[in-house]
Amino acid sequence: MLHWNMLRVRSAFYQSWRGFRTFPCAAVEVKNEPILGFNEGSPERAELQKALDDLKGKTEEIPCVVGDEHVWTKDIRYQLSPFNHSHKLAKFCYADKELLNKAILASVAARREWDLKPIQDRAQVLFKAADIISGPKRAEILAKTMIGQGKTVVQAEIDAAAELIDFFRFNAKHAVELESQQPLDSDGSTNTMLYRGLEGFIAAVAPFNFTAIGGNLAGTPALMGNVVLWKPSDTAMSASYAVYNVLRDSGLPPNIIQFVPADGPVFGDTITSSEHLAGINFTGSVPTFKRLWKQVAQNLDVYKNFPRVAGECGGKNFHFVHKSADVQSVVTGTIRSAFEYGGQKCSACSRMYVPDSLWPQIKQGLLDIHKQLKVGDPVEDWNTFFSAVIDDKSFARIKKWLDHAKSSPKLNIIAGGHCNDKKGYFVEPTIIESTDPQEAIMAEEIFGPVLSVYVYPENDYLEVLHLIDNTSPYALTGAVFALDKNVVNEAAKALRNAAGNYYVNDKSTGSIVAQQPFGGARASGTNDKPGGPHYVLRWTSPQVVKATHVPLREWKYPYMG
Picture 1 (cartoon, rainbow, N blue to C red):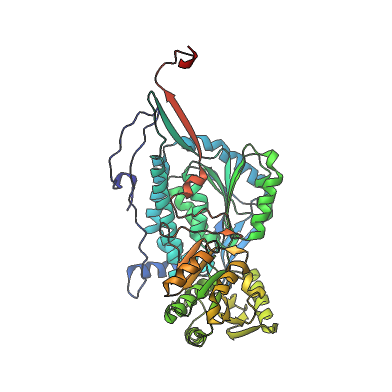
Picture 2 (cartoon, rainbow, N blue to C red):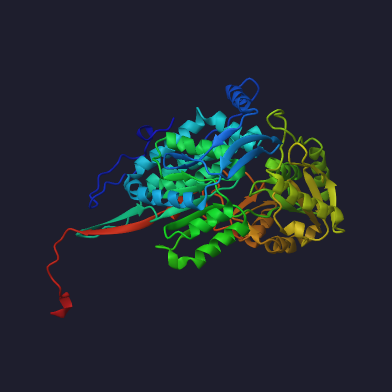
């Protein structure tokens, strides 16, 4: 358990007169949450199994929550389980424009009192929430992530438990430590940096694929003294509502985070037309992010401030293989990166570049493992490697790519290629060889279990590095597999701007909070690196206060005589 009064600090608080505030000079010590194993007979497995059993066939009712008011509108929706779409896991409703505007005004009214609370008090909410998720609520949130978002137990554990807990604890740590970053004083005066929240509200727009991301998009701005309208993903509703309730149970006051499921365009139109918009914290598709950005630009004359716009938009992530690479690392790393969670991670590898000299070995290795991959129901069969894709829209989009691969003379499906949506939205893990490195399938994001491979002449690796850098508009993650240190150095220079998270002899997925802060540039987003120490600063509007203690007596300068 990690509570504020139990935190170990490297140095005691020091008392410093800074006009009207006392600032702690403390380093809060937190560690990454251990990932549980869920082995046969373990207590965590028994608890999770019970939570999964409790949700079988049940439909949870999830209202909009504005302040302490639970509101139902007429626009009723359902969250379906991806691997069994006959199971309605949650019934919820869309907030309309009127309710969203009510939520905005209620939040703005609550903002000042919340922003004036000491950071230690605000941080305590996230520390307590992390403890609750780590302990009594872990199984419930994992179960809702597994059933609602189609995750296997390990994928749910590293997301809805470990990553979410880490986001809360490390961001709280960084927020507390930020207070000790103060400007220099001078003779006769002291200078203080106050890390205020933004004036207005933050709109948090969350994706389906990580329960942790929704918690971070809403929770971190709130930590920094902001008020937030949280639009959870329709297809992550159940787990998101559980996280919201944990935050409220941990002491988050009403109106600081409003829980408002909504139709995307209605939400976007409403928030961007409000004079109180102070920021957008977004994870999702490029078209949606561009639409929001354009709406903000068109409405600049409406706002009291220039809104902060932060976004993460996915990627076309690469694995580059050099002839000096360790073949087994390439094979296992690529299988995991491309196919875990059905390729629905922003960081998933979806394009691979292999030298012709190694392709026979790597191809055989991929095919050998491919035969063993089990796709199915992760609740009934814990040996499932990945499950269904998230919904019917995703299934239809991926099916179009599979049909394209079957009809294109430049593409050859060497494994998988089939899909079926009768019971769930199931797509086979698919490996496609492309003879054209510029083929659309090598450049465009698919967001499914589809890996495209281009085989190149082994001595042309420098040209291939240039190709990787220029093929796709994205720049999120990428990996270089090479044991030749000169090649590793060459690749680092050539691919300096091709990925925000760059891996050497490791897969392109699996970033851990505080170890590999995450994000990329180009079409992948604004690269604000959630999970790193600077992320909290994004959600502050600092004020510098100079207090002079020596009376001012003279208006002339000495040289004036």
